[in-house]
Amino acid sequence: MSVSFSVRSAAVRPDPRAILTLLKPVTWFPPMWAYTCGAISAGVPLTERLPLLALGIAITGPLVCASSQAVNDWFDRHVDAINEPDRPIPSGRIPGQWGLAIALFWTALCVVAALPLGAFGVAAVAVALLFSWGYSAPPFRFKRNGWIGNAAVGFTYEGLAWVTGAGIMLGNRVPPMPLVVLAVLYSIGAHGIMTLNDFKAMDGDRRMGIRSLPVQLGADGAARVASLVMLLAQAAVIVLLVSWQRTMPAMAIAVLTLVQAVMMWRFMQAPRERALWLSALGVPFYVGGMMIAAFAVRSLPVVVGAAP
Image 1: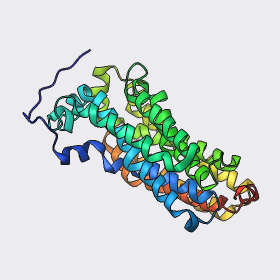
Image 2: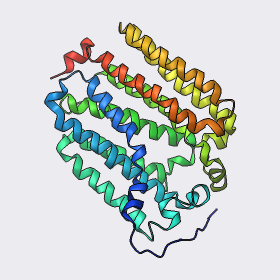
Image 3: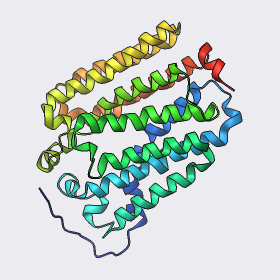
Image 4: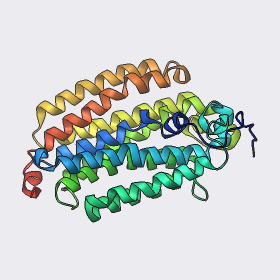
């Protein structure tokens, strides 16, 4: 199915404010936070590695995440003409092929900026960029299936960013297994967070053949799955921390998870109306637990032994 949209502006160059809107600064926080959590979890003195920490944060947010937003908006311009026609591309504030040009330029800029991070950092950025293009662009277009697309975003935004932060702080190497396991678990939980963002686009997604979880399962079914995935991932983190004798951090995360569970119960009473509410007010408790877990594992013997 194809949908045409009218360009409302005769401009031949994009307004700088429209470019900033296209890059969506509000979305940069999750990978920046995950990278910071990874760096903290590595158990090394961050004051000695502040330039690498700052550069990594800048790359994960304003560069890699921003480029993924530009890529997504370009390949979603026909869907956005239905769901959100005031976005920069369908509204004409970014005219012609400028959207694609910005996506390509920002992608190249990511690779160049990552060079000082070394081979490990460059490889991580390359993987993130491949996933961001694969998520939105044909022939892969992972987002056509909510199970696959949300997993891809969760992996890159949370897990890959966490592992990259830890690996760079440890001198460009794969982090110890406990850190990788935490990154994987929080990536799984992020699948549920991504589902929350799909409720607002149900109508357009259904018309364009995008099988998000709310489209596949209905609003009620998707709400249950999103909530369960987030809760189970955090429950697994709590169990691991207890097994690693990190009882106090485990209890703190348990309290945060309980707060989310109460909010999720309210969310499931009216999923379409309250998805953004849960995303805005509930997800901060989730990411707060990530930071607690990161500090909790800094002193694990296997992590301390890996620190240079």
